[in-house]
Image (tube, rainbow, N blue to C red; front, top):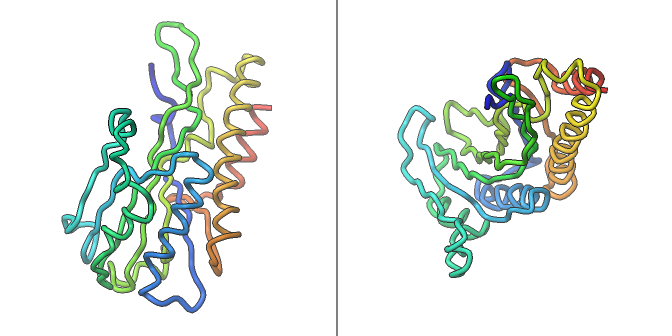
Length: 225
């Protein structure tokens, strides 16, 4: 099967800025955003963490992938992957020229197009989200454009459906609209939760191409309906 996010898609980000921000508060800001993500996703563990010096072209000076399989859960050996513990370890030595990256997962509805004339299928599968906390001197003060915290959602295809085989089938359109709406609701719930609980001064939900996300969402949902 062909995953529909292989079609034309765009990278989606959420940038966050904080009022009167002090560098030593960066770990607490990262914890706050990760907690809100865990509330929405229902998956409270960090999957991986890394620290990049100077710019992303440099190899990480810290990197850890957490084992979150069923055996680890049963043995209670996942405490290091708790948000507070993972952030404390990765950001133990704060450097102003370093970016700190934390990966988490959430389940999003994903369409897989059928092969050989078979109908496509919708499944909820884990998608990776990266939360990055930028030191003020990282990559020529990239935080000014990207935010002190930036959330990388990956491709926007989970919210902007673009699979032509459903357009002529009313039942397929109805099903697609229902699943895409659920994905959009999760995205909005996270964004609004961050705005309410994380003490930010401003936020920006944006795509790499610069095309307004709201217009893309409205256009696709109207087409599906």
